[in-house]
Amino acid sequence: MDLIWNPPLHEAYKILLSKTQNSNEENGFDELLAVEECEVPVIDVSRLEESDEVRREECKCEIFKACQEWGLFQVVKHGISNGILRGLRVEQEKIFKQPFEKKSKENTFFNFSSGSYRWGSPNATCIRQLSWSEAFHIPLTDILMPSAGSNTFSWRIQEFGSQVSILAQTLADILAHKMGHKCSFFEENCLASTCYIRLNRYPPCPFPSQVHGLMPHTDTAFLTILHQDQVRGLQMVKDGKWISVKPNPDALFIIIGDLFQAWSNGVYKSVEHRVVTNPKLERFSMAYFFCPSDDTLIESCTEPSLYNKFSFGEYRQQVRDDVHNFGYKIGLPNFLTRTGTTFDAPLQHSNV
Ligand SMILES: C=C1C[C@]23C[C@@]1(O)CC[C@H]2[C@@]12CC[C@H](O)[C@@](C)(C(=O)O1)[C@H]2[C@@H]3C(=O)O
Ligand SMILES: O=C(O)CCC(=O)C(=O)O
Ligand SMILES: [Fe+2]
Image (cartoon, rainbow, N blue to C red; front, side, top):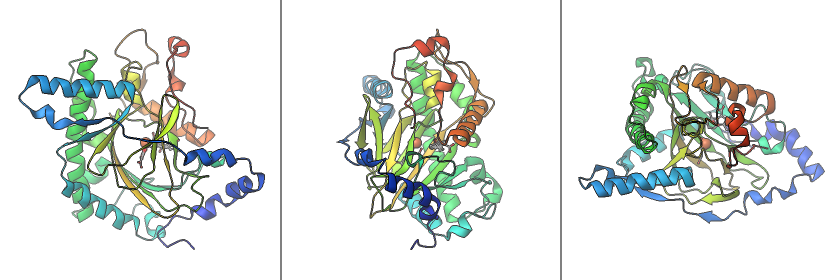
């Protein structure tokens, strides 16, 4: 029996799950859990504040290298206090543990815009496209508006948002400089009002080897700053193989997204990742997506370009259309130029 706060995932996935169990078609899915664990690069970003230029440069080089070779790494001594992270985590749990009926009712929950509360994969066509999770995907404008009210949750999320946005700007500027660009692009285009915070909850799942917590995807933004609790679940593709990312609640995980891969002309890797479920434990994570405004034009900073230019709005619309039509996001491969199509580097993996 589902608890009243859980979304009706069993009910929604009944048909797809029974098809699979009867046909035995997806038994090879055990590979979801039998994945080697690995510690992704750990970068101490407090060095960026030091007066010693050599130490600052050493840190920047590590960031540059991690974005090219991994696309996912962790930063420690990031300056965001445990109090802020723990405080938001407590509020996060409280809002998820409201009745499902209340969470899914439009426009009543903290005045979030419609569509902020999401659960499962409404457009899934096969078991691999299922996600055993629920999320609040919140435009920061919803939180910054006076109508957001002054409750502990809004207050905590504002605190988190304002601190991580400084880290996001700093990292983005370093990555731009490393590509030879001393520009104010990020400062001008990625504003507090254009970014998003996503709160994720993964309820325990009775079929952990069959169903994803969050299906394989790349993030859309320039970069994501992720905080996850101590429960394992995040996995990423490294050298063509899935590996499990060791959790570290003291760290923030940085994930390079599609916009940085396009902007850097394939130098920075928008890494494919997924979340697997746990049969007993629930898991929480929170992500800050560093995004520009919808009219911002994304073009490669070097030639010949692997990708056609696009506005962020166009890109997001394409993602929405693909998810609606196919059940999964295609992402950057939709925007490859002729040069990009013949480019022999590992580009995006398909979700299915
Ligand atoms: C069904 C999907 C929605 C999503 C793209 C995906 O194929 C799988 C993950 C989802 C996600 C998670 C991170 C970001 O919030 C997001 C915008 C993204 O790039 O991948 C969403 C996509 C979405 O909500 O449209
Ligand atoms: O929960 C996690 O660890 C990852 C979440 C994620 O990939 C996302 O929200 O885009
Ligand atoms: Fe993600």
